[in-house]
Amino acid sequence: MSIFNFFKNQFIEVIEWTDDSTNTLVYRFPVANQEIKMGARLTVRESQVALFVNEGEIADVFGPGQYELVTRNMPVLTKLKSWPYGFDSPFKAEVYFINTKQFVNQKWGTSNPIMMRDPEFGVIRLRGYGIYSYRVSDPETLLKQLFGTNSLFTTEAIEGQLKRMIVSGLSDLFAESGIAALDLAMHYDELSEAGREKMRPRFESFGFDITSLYIENLSLPPEVERTLDERTSMGVIGNLNDYQSFQTAKATREAAQNEGGAAGLGAGFGVGAMIGQTMQTPQPPATPSATPPEQACPDCQTMNPVGAKFCASCGTSLLSVTVPCRSCQAPIDKDAKFCPECGTKQQNECPSCHALNAPNAKFCADCGQSLT
Image 1 (cartoon, rainbow, N blue to C red):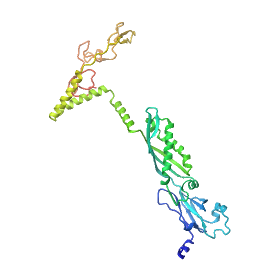
Image 2 (cartoon, helix red, strand yellow):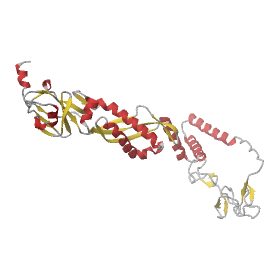
Image 3 (cartoon, rainbow, N blue to C red):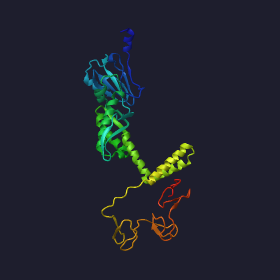
């Protein structure tokens, strides 16, 4: 060792750490030959804790403030060692700075789907992701369980372990909750809080305190989502027959208005032929049943054949729905084509092209205009 380095090592140290990163958990202050001088100054800032380790054993824990390393400042070290000459000579020791701030926006997510049983869909695979935050709550446990004698310890070193603990705990929580997959979104807050409480003892075993945990999204497999989209589409469409009639009328109008020459003409003929075939296709005859279906009279409860308009016993009308006549306002069957009182034709006239349609038609068969 040169004379310059010898005298440099005899200067009183100022031991401090200013963190210029966002992910450092533990930093070991570099001291030449691990020799700390008598009267060295130790500065611990807010959101920091300093661990004083002597010969591999924790001697003292210092909170925020400034300290002079003498016997009266280090009662634990005094019990560990009996120094006949005080601190007149250097002693081997190490100082570890622990970052106690919150480490926020730590991400968790399922690398593989979570298998769970859903009351509506049966066995499904669920994926999820979110964020969490934590801080150091027990520096001594952190030193003993994780970083040991490393000179630097960052959040990346423990990130994989914490993420797997969270996914494992949340998988168990989701399965035990019994909440249907379609109702999970309305329970994000409750599940997040329950997950944080479930993770607390696991984090404490490493000297951490989990301060928050949030579920951002829980999603079903793509094939299940496609099935749900189809179910939603069917709910929006409503009556399939009405929707099919509307689509046919729309296709007919577009084919008639197409000015694309022979191609458009051919398309129009094709659509017309398709509709004609649909209308001309003979329907298979209904198989007669052994007993003709009957219906009860709403007044005297006498059984009458289905299709009868009046009760054979009391004469009460058996029409399920009646509408007023377009001319004389007499009550008639909603499917009647002519009024039995005045003989007026009951077909609907399209307000756009004035074509006549069936009385119960909702769209014009010529132009597709709504008749409702």
